[in-house]
Length: 98
Image 1 (cartoon, one colour):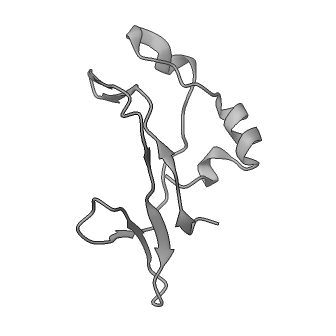
Image 2: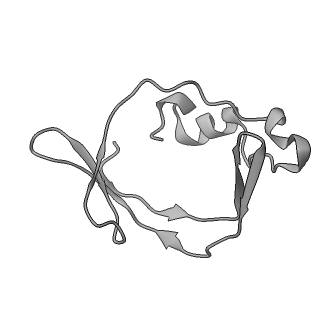
Image 3: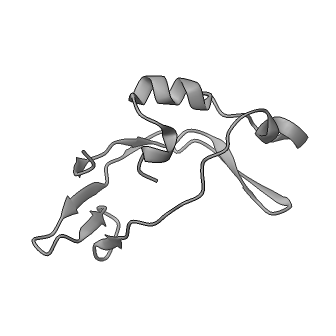
């Protein structure tokens, strides 16, 4: 389900880190990272700009929270709601790779 090439668009957006909002512009291109499983069973991520494969480790992550709270204080709201993402991907958002 996760292995193979992934195309990632880089639209404009922002990241919130504590009290700071970091804004970034669109790169206007697609990145194509690769995820693969080694014979040992270890998942790794590769990218044309990466010096070596990045080991990927499964972990218990907190649930995703998207919605109205993210649109306060001038921070852009997400383009899709959690319900819309789950409909498009046909699974819960917490089951998506991140």
